[in-house]
Image (cartoon, rainbow over all chains, first blue to last red; front, side, top):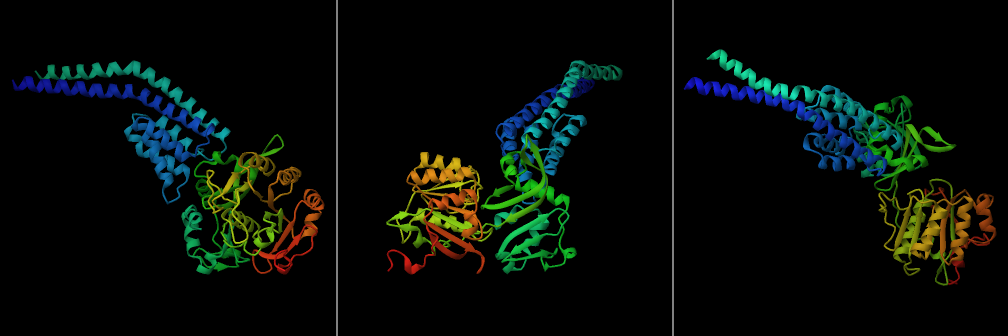
Length: 172
Length: 320
């Protein structure tokens, strides 16, 4: 009886681990998409609205899912502090702070951190160019993320279950 | 002053707060240049400032502005959004909360033969705007005749209190004074200096019956205000271009009184300028107020009538 319960627990946890790993692959394209939409909104705010970065960030941050939206909200918050931080520091700190909550990888992070060097520091035309470049970059990564999702999501899910099964069989 | 200090990077903020009180209270300009010492101008004097806020004449002892500070300063004054200041960068200065003006210089970007903006900004001139209520008291009695506001030109060299006087006249006319009832006032504030508007809201007190057309070219703005706001008095700063002259003519003939200012050290000099000379010849203005710095900014050097004859208080039509 104890053995049976033990095997059930092992099987269950192994399946869950597989699910979690699989979910990482499923979440990455979703978050990348959110990020792309957020940057698209930022482009509109900057190019057509000339909205100050601070206000645009708050607006976008509130509308996006919290893993991505949080970056914008934190950046806006940092801009408002009395320490008079530079735009670059505000943005990069916000990215670093929220990164662990996302499932995104280092490639995406580097692209975002790079954006920090130019955000708000040139005319609208130039800002648009940089935002477009960033979005093209991210779109490429999104494509790649989708391919990986197709390949690995189900694999890890089944692998978890099968791995658990293997352990149980070996133990019995 | 508080608004300005709050928007400066921490080291500059500390230095300015450490300045001797009498200097801080009479600050006129804070000049910042990349890799050069910080300079303050106060009550007609200029001086460098050391890290501890002491005044010094020695260039080497002055606290020096680094590139990092410049970046931070730009981030702060543009609220992290330089792209939202395209028009301001074209004109070369930014008006910030409190109505203070920050002049900028750097590398100019041209496009199609026109200035598109300034990149690589390296010099800042923070001009502290001071509201001097009551500056118009001395001249107000001269501005009316038979209950009508007279067309007036204020002539003054730079930083002699021309804008302050113009603003106070606008405010006094708008509130009404012992010399006249209150009037509807229209201000065309091309350089956002008279009303110091931020997001369209005047930061200075320009009176309850005053409409401000912010950042609008003077000639177009005067016509717009006449059509849309039916002002009794139009106020504009720094007249000089041909189209300004035409707009003033139009306004005068539309029954609106015009009070404006021009750069110049005396009337003879102003009379030589093409547009203004013509207006003066045709007696467009009935009053001229000449300012100087003789006894500090805002000294009234003289008040003249349409034929350029000086007016004394005793010669006023009703006081004899």
